[in-house]
Image (tube, rainbow, N blue to C red; front, side):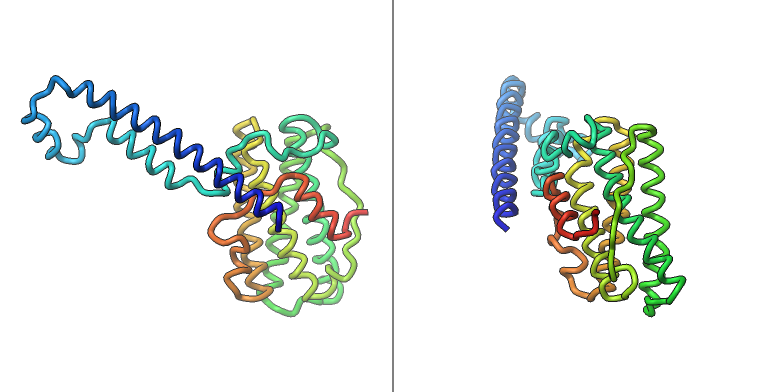
Length: 258
């Protein structure tokens, strides 16, 4: 909880600095605008003030955009905007390669979990709930597609899949859905924490696309576990980006990696 409080404090501090800088820009723009209008007649000023929307001064629109930008600056967005923060360890590779291998490792884990659950479901039908069965089929397809995409993007630089042991979480319905909730939310935290660290635009787009799918999975799994607001949006209106260290700690805590 302390690291989340500290992260929130730093994000709010960064937001205040950004707001101050944008206010300074707005003030400078207004001063320049006043100088440019100093030679105009008062009548022209009044007439321009009554012009329709299409005739609004371009500067006014720019300032409006700046103010809207401040309003859209969320804690999660401000944290993610700090490029270069919380990157994966060097063992995953350099630059985009390291980030993609980090993501691939998480996708390996998710795909292996769902593949094993799918195999067990075919053997003994341990999942009785119809909606949970639909969830399993869907996420199994999605996570394997994520693995295939990342492996193709990385080529020979792709890391190998880790050895895993899931215990009863892939053969009993209640542990399965609880684990799915944890894994999918970890994926959301991971992608939101790394997406803006990626340099290649095509990879950024792919990461954000995968992020939204992970979020959809997480929300459905949360509802299957228990229909509460907290299971839909665990962090409230804004998700919390995790550093790679936080993600790896959460993964290690599962005990799944061997």
